[in-house]
Structures are given as structure tokens and as C-alpha cells.
Amino acid sequence: MASLVDQFCPNVHDAAITAAAYDPWSGVFATADASGLVAVTRSGESSPGLLFQPGEPGVPIGGALALNRGGKLIAVGDDNGTIGVFQTSDAGMLFQDAREGARGRVRAMRGVAVSPEGARVASISADGLIRIWDVERQERLVAWQGFGGKTLEFDPRGTRILCLTAEGQPQLVDLSSNQAVPLERLRMAADRVHFSLDGTLVIASGASGISILRVVDGGSVSSFVSRGGSGLLSVVRSPDGQQLGAVSQRSVHFFTLPDLEAVSSIRHGAPEPTGAAAWLPAGVRIGGSDGLLHGGEGQSSGPVTGVGGFADHRVVSHGSRLGFWHQHRRVREIDVGSTIREAHVDREGQFIAVLPERGSLLVFETRKGTRVFDAGPETVGSPSVGIGGSVVASMLPSGGCRWWNMSQNRAFELRWPQAMTLSHGGTWLGVVTPRGAVKIIDPNSGKDALTDPQLAQDAQARLLSFVSRAPHLLVLDADNILLFLDLQHSAHNGRPAVARDVIQFGSPPDRIWGITGGQYAAVRLPEAGGCAMVFVDLARSEVVSEVAGLHPSAWIDAEQALILEPARSGALLERDMNGVERRVLRVLPGGEWLSFGSGGVYDGSANFSTALGM
Image 1 (tube, rainbow, N blue to C red):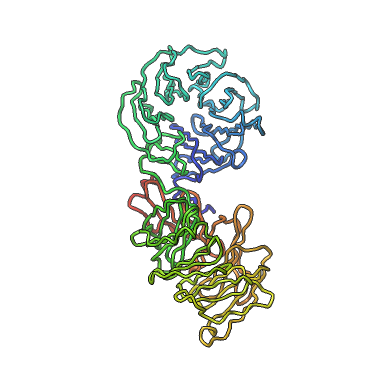
Image 2 (spheres, rainbow, N blue to C red; image 1 turned 180 degrees about the vertical axis):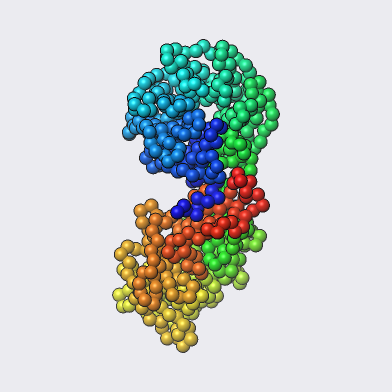
């Protein structure tokens, strides 16, 4: 069954989009990114239906992506110098030529092309070598040195190849004779060269402008000089072949073909564009560093870097921007000004505590999105924070714990705690002493709220968590044993709560949560490249479920026993305690958003369907 995250997915990249290709005859569209992931959207699909990694994971694809005429084949070249040809139906590999180590890196692929019938594949590499292979026989036909640029193309009949010399001059080579067809010399060096859709024109472009030449006699037709600005990154042809789009850092400029008369311009909104672009039936789409395609809608919030939430409230970090969701709706976005490490929302959804990577602990009010509290430079690099009611607390990098009652404008500090936890309502603050004992403090006075709980004689507390909406405390000791304490009697008659062993873990958890109702606890276990969430029945002292392979920063909604984790294409994914996908909250280009589950869309912004290309 397809993942819920794959639905209503405008793109699947969480790394910068570095290459794009569109075949107007079949409607097949493909993109690739800096992590080496390729996504193919076939005719009739609203989002990529084929994802594959053609080379080693993590090896970038630096622009070398091409479809053959008809869209049945895709050629991909990566920065290791490996090139492959695959079927767009199922990613079946028809051809591959692999390089390894330093030998491969000097042959990093800059452009690839597949002949119309799919019989041959060509490449231009960073060292200026053009190679052409016979796909079926897996045999190299030619290797020409002294070339350059970032593209090359077969003509519509597959008998000639269009490329660039090391000096940026277009060259049209007849493959039967290996002789160059004369073309007029350009005044402006080019780094990309294309045929018009009908194959009668050569379109050469570089940072300084565009030149159009006739194929029949090599003569110049028209040119455009880019004056000022950031220069041109690439050009795209309209699906009907009548216009050209010139992509710069901020805009797309439209021209008629072949005379290059200016038509219009738009701001594309793509952050840090690489030049990856395509002109689809829905318009020009530009790849950005946020892993999304843009076409004038404005920038997206970017990939999800962290999540948190409680009950009906969700906080989603996008680098330095924070999205706040209530139920199925995205209420607002807050620019924190620095990359966010952690964000936590209080039980009532009134305040968000934000811990930046390089800044002090901040608190924002959710109704207006305004900053209401700055905890000061002593909290920069805080190991952990908590918020409940009007209380916000922080472990200090220098040691100890500090907390603030924002409604009373009072601050408290203890220099000795080794760890802390704050109850969701802000009623109790639990801390660990230097000897590993536990104390329960009243955050409003700084004094003991309860008689000190009793752990086993040799137990030393390491992590703490109050159980949501119950007078219970969970403790994880140094031997990775989960302990349970019922604080109810201690609160009423002053007798110390006595810890009960629940279960021991084979590897050290880094987070624990007490789930509302007191039946379950959730524990996060780090694993290679991610984490696992383990749910424990506290009464029966046994594991009832384990969900592995999660994002390393996955979180628990302690009110509803839901797993929250970042997902691709600007999304937060919710799973139940058995790992079943439940809901997706997704941001789209231009500030649009939607929420959906297995039953369809729950809610969305006014123009979310436009952002999806629907």
C-alpha cells in the first residue's frame, strides 16, 4: 500500500533540486536532487509515481538528466561519473557505466542525452570528455576530448549531436562521419545548448544572453543580451515550441521564437535556484534549494526539520521558520530568525517555547505570533526545555536549571539539577539531584512540592517525565530501567511515593513520555540514521508495540499517543502507536497548505489545489 505521505505531494525532494527534464510528446516529467534521488511523474499522475536512486545514495546529480522523445527512457549521470539509462515505467536499468573514487569525480557528469529511439546515450563530463554508448550492446562508440558546457542533445532523427566546445561555441556533429556541421560563431560564450522542438533551430545560452542559429545553414537568427542583474542560469522551451523562458536567480523572462521578442517576466520565487527548470503545461517550474518546484507562487517554508505537539496543537520547524497548526488548520508561520533545534507547545496551545541552534530560549504567543519572552544568553545551547501553563523551564549549558513564571514575572534557579521535566499544566517541576535522586518542586515558589520520592537504593535517575493529566512520574535510571511513581498519596498525606520497576531496555533511550490516562509510556531509542518508538504497558510491565525506522527527531503527542515525525515535501506525518499512518499536515509553495488522511482532504488553504497543479 502506498504511503499516505505520497498523496497530494507536489514533489518528493528534501534536498536542492539540481536537474529537471520534460518530454512534451508524452507528458513525462522528471527531477533529480543533490542527494541523488530521481522522481518521475508520468502522464496522468499529479505527483511523482516513480522514485529511485540510480547511483550510490548521497551522490549528487548535478544537472545530468534527460528523457528520450516519447518519455520511455531516462538517462542519469552523477558526480561520481556514473551514467545509466532506465525505463520510466519501473526504473528497470538498461545500461550503466560506473566510475569509482577520484577517477569518477573528474568525470562528474554535467549533461546527458538519449537518442529519440533510445539506442544511444551520450554524456559531457566535467573534464570536457564527450562519450557516446550503444545502449543494447553496452559498448562505447566514441570518446571526444576538448568540449565543455552543461548540456548536449541528439537531433530529432538521432543522426547528429549538438554540443559545446571548451570555448562555449556550439558544435553540431554528424555521427556517421564524425564531422562538424558549420555554425556561425557566437559573440557571447554559451554553457547550454538545445534544439528547438522541431529541430530547425539551435538555442545557445549563457550567463550573458541567448543566441538563435539556423540548423540548415548555421546562420544567426537573433540574440538577446542580458544587461546587469544576476545573469541567466538556463533556458526552457514552451510545450508548443513557440516561446522560450530564460531563468535568472529571481525571475523568468519570456521571449518569442525565433526572433526573441520580449513577452513578459515573472518572479519565480525559488530559493537559491540551480538552473533546474522545465516548462510544463501548467507553466514554468523552477527547482529550489527547498526541494520544491516554483512558478511564481512564492517560496515555500522548506523541508521539515523538527516536529512537536500536544492534543490538537502541532509545531513544525522549517529551518528558521515555525509553523503552528490547530486541529487540521495551519494557523500561522513565525520567523524565529535562527535555525530551530526544538519547539514545544503548551497544553492549551497558547505559547510555544523555541530553542534555536545558536540563540537563547524564546517564547512566542500563538494567537498573534509575537515574541513574549527571551530567556537570555545563559540559555544558549540549553540541553532541554519545557513549557506548561505560564511556566517555561530550561536546563542551563553551564549546569543547573532555571525557570520563569511568565504571569508573575518571576525567575528561579537551582545550580545542582542534572535533568528536569515540567508537568504539562506547569504544576510540578521534577529534577534529578547530583546523586541521582528525584525531587518535586513547586515552580511558583521554588520550594519542595512533595516529599522526595523513593527510588531503589542503588538506582540513579537519568531522565524524567510526568504522565499527562495524571499525578504520576516516570523515571529512567542509569541502568536503563523504567520506573513508575504514583504521586497521588504523596500529594494528599505527605508520604513519599515509592518507585516500581517497569521494564529494562537493552540500549539507552534518549526521551521518555507518559501518555494521558497513565496506561502507557513511550520511549525513544536512537538507532543508525533514525530512531524507534517503544510503547510500554505500565501496569503489565511489557512492550505492547515498537515502531522502528523513524526520523531521528520523531516526537510523541502524549495526549493522544501519536508518533509525530518529519516527512518529505514539507510535511508532518502522524502515526498511531502501532505505526499506522493517520494524518499528514503539509505546506506547499506560496504559503499554501493542506491536511489529509486516508479518507481524503480534511482542510486546506484557499489555493492549495493550484499549488499542487490540480
